[in-house]
Length: 107
Image 1: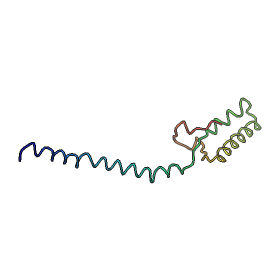
Image 2 (image 1 turned 90 degrees about the vertical axis):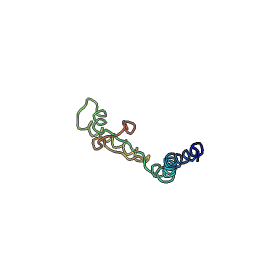
Image 3 (image 1 turned 45 degrees about the vertical axis):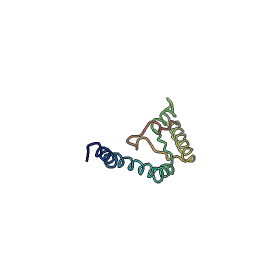
Image 4 (image 1 turned 135 degrees about the horizontal axis):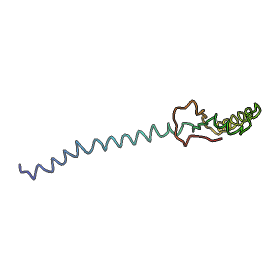
């Protein structure tokens, strides 16, 4: 058999063994994402992270009286409750190790 006759067969083997497995894996991964992962991620509620200490300090201003602190705490709780009413899971920033800045709610 001549060398020219074996060359197309070698190219077909290369395509079969090297190119098609990654393509097939990519197609399977895309299908699994659309079928399983995308609906699961869409079903999760949005998350808001509140830095409660900062919100209370900002809310009470320069007045450090007990009434000002209580009013600032009540305001922060009301804002967290409003977020919860809109479907958010509200977390205190002091209990979260790390989070993207897009999740931070600034009451």
